[in-house]
Image (cartoon, rainbow, N blue to C red):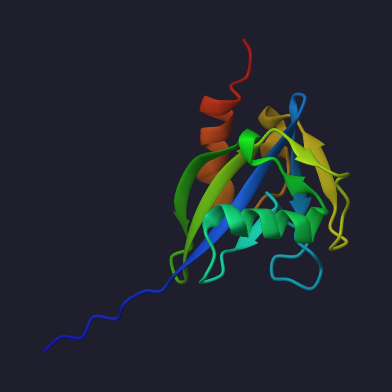
Length: 141
């Protein structure tokens, strides 16, 4: 008899906050793995949460703002990391209330999407960045 081990998948939500023609990236806090590397703000979905609830909670915890769900859109999901399975769920948010602040002492950068590859971003975001810069925010010729 062969035993197959079920892989546990961790769902993670990430938010692309867009203001004018720029989007927000934040660095990982010093007390977390991959500290100093940039990513889209967000975090793990708890067992009892819907994705949108986790997104709202994580963005409030990290940035101190409340998302406007009428202007928040699901964009794409992708799998990441071969060893530990992580499924990333990306959202686009065009409106929020409050002033964005660094509640976890992370660095924040508002960047033009076409310049994302100039930043040291988590490798797990690479496919999404290609999608984002190719389909959602293509560069003008």
